[in-house]
Image (cartoon, rainbow, N blue to C red; front, side, top):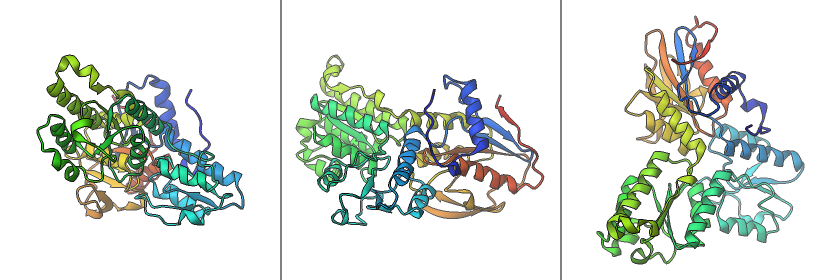
Length: 405
């Protein structure tokens, strides 16, 4: 039975909660990726099978609010954003929590200002080995309220094990992201590692594996993305791939495949077992489920899609990527972005800025809308988005919940 976390009631939704409970009871093996239909007459919502808070996010939120409850009167700090959701972070700030760093790692409050009796919460993304050590030296126990996602820690553990066995670790992630910085920090102490952002960078790395690219170009090609003392001639003969857990799972598999192919070309298929480590077991289940559910959702005929989540949320942006080119998609942080039936504010991935689009809602009935949300998005925010869109149709009738055929 799934663990029940103690998170604030304001993040929950009776409607979304009931949908999730019903689908879980009907599909305990998680094999049915069909949408759930909310038929309101003039507007029909197709809701993804999996979306919203994952285990790691609920665990982090429970730990953060427990820290507040257990430490009245104490100074409480977060290393950086708890999760990539502005409403959750704003609520914690409103309760007196202070951020020590930005999501990009810029120091907001010097560690020198901390006292041994302060409380410091480690966010869901985890943090670097250096910061764990720095807090410990100050007399602060970083494990007391360590909200690092267990699946992130699983990646660290697997990466360290492989590095100790002589493998170089290729990390699929954004090298400036908190989680990737933390993963890189924990793994590089045990062996060489290098970060690749996408398939393009993976192909570039594969060229070095095959000795097709001059080694002297490596430092320029991967500036700031490899561990100290990295030697391409020496360290690209045995590889294992792990990822930032919020990346596209299928892209991680593809990058892993590219590394395997390059090693086969270099050493031969009969020797691949000595040079390539299978790391499929490190992929985050929630990321895979949410992305798989989005693909299932896209099987439905629809007029548009709305994806809800923080604008700096990596996993949310990848859900949007899956929609692009298949259906008009609007990436909104909350219901407030839906201004009217004629105007919506949303983030564009290509421009990486919030824009306003006119005439976004088709002048037809019924309108079919796909709905999903990132792993750091509360169910209450999804319900609010659905409610806001429904309010644009004054003749909506009572909702009907049923699995799509």
